[in-house]
Amino acid sequence: AQSVSQHNHHVILSEAASLELGCNYSYGGTVNLFWYVQYPGQHLQLLLKYFSGDPLVKGIKGFEAEFIKSKFSFNLRKPSVQWSDTAEYFCAVNPPTGGFKTIFGAGTRLFVKA
Amino acid sequence: EPEVTQTPSHQVTQMGQEVILRCVPISNHLYFYWYRQILGQKVEFLVSFYNNEISEKSEIFDDQFSVERPDGSNFTLKIRSTKLEDSAMYFCASSPGQGGYTFGSGTRLTVV
Image (cartoon, rainbow over all chains, first blue to last red; front, side):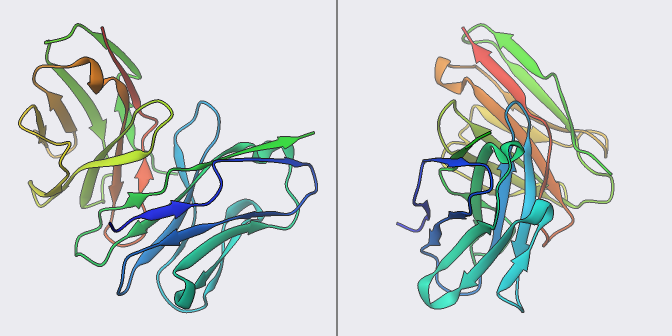
């Protein structure tokens, strides 16, 4: 079945550690890719997005993601996490089926220790 | 920064009752969506709405669900006869088209 997979359900890091969250999708064709973040008790917010062009995209709060078409991947990275990055991170895809329906991965819960 | 507004933030209802969840999308957006997130589970697509009609819906969006844009600013989700398994956080979102969504803060629906 076509899907969005996030490799880690829970990640625990210390402050200043580097972060990489994996995301793979199984849709063929041209897709739009997103990372959303949900801070505790808050709603989903868009972190960054990729439609075309430079496969390395930069988002808010120092996050970036790299689109690797051959691997169907869109991993999220941050060189040095802070305690305030504790949140749940969702990878999401607009599949190439027309319209702008977004399919979300299961999410990765990140906890950053101070 | 423009926001998507959802009301109420929390709704408790008895099984079998009808509920209406309300959303005010961003005014110049053209596409509207409802998603839900059952506690501890994925964010699931329910329905997308464009040009005053449903453009796509998921298997979850059965005859018990309906959406409406009654007055050009509000976008509502109605659940006709709620079930226990409808308990979830319901998120409204809007987009201008391509470009990612702006989500509302959600309505937590508890069916008892």
